[in-house]
Length: 120
Image (cartoon, rainbow, N blue to C red; front, side):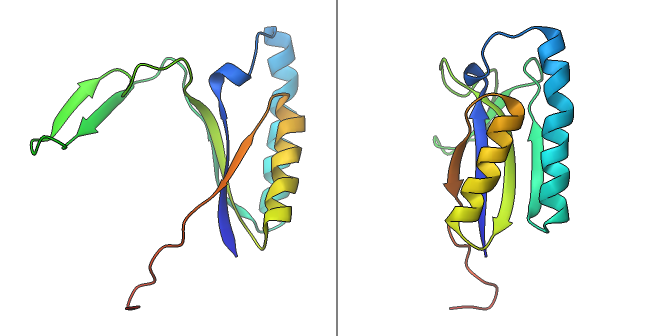
């Protein structure tokens, strides 16, 4: 099994009416329920567009917290889903279902392998 990150940048969403978004919510929730029922669910959530944003930086040797985006960028993470699946084909399937439900593109990346406790 491997964990895959399925995510979108907020700018990929596009301009839609409030009614359009209300119609997409139940579709996206249904896909998350399907992922849970399949035993592949790790986490899913959307980020607040106007919520708190800050960074933590220790590259100077002193920890500094800064309010605001970490870098000046035109794109920022809008939401994400993490699935634990047997193969890339299954990750693609879930990404496709999420893209269809949400109505905007999704990008997929596999998490690197974590060292196992006690392994050398």
